[in-house]
Length: 244
Image 1 (cartoon, rainbow, N blue to C red):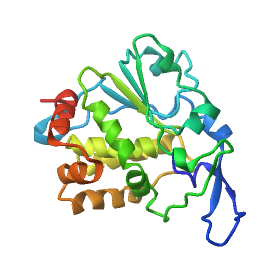
Image 2: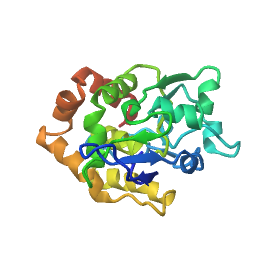
Image 3: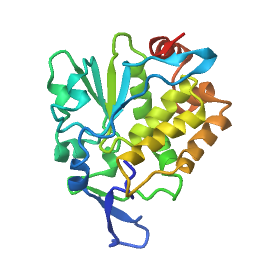
């Protein structure tokens, strides 16, 4: 979730050194349950391959899932939640987590940014919010990709609250690893604007992430040096998510 977009501003500060504080609008987030959903499969990938359809999905929070939602029909093996504990507490646990046979991995990304009142003091530099999501939560991203590198975890769905910022960064890193070209990665990122029409994302918001990848010599170096994933992990993820 990009906090400045899905929050109510609170300009009060306790002292001059305190960063701008915002209040997360949980009521607004609640209205986006089970939206911003899509299959990441079908994209052309490296070496004339393609991302497998029906294997990995992304979404907003799943505290409510209408019967008519395609999510209700998914035969998932794994559900990965990237919401903080405070978000799950206020919005509710994801409905699919209660289904028999589904493994629920809660990676509470952003715990240090939230409390029970929804307060956060995080104010990333404008235009670099999504890079901040990568750098602040490197250990969480390592855990996320380690799950993806396990065998027998697919079909898998991952989500945060809005399904556009943490989830969008995760999808961008994953698709980069799979060899999807950046134009298509950006197009997937911007597809969230179909849901969040009043607070749209911009393509340029991913530029700092791509620049960091390039600074490390490409996705292999980035995943190794920034995220902490080894070649064996990347190989397993690619074997499971790519088709010839």
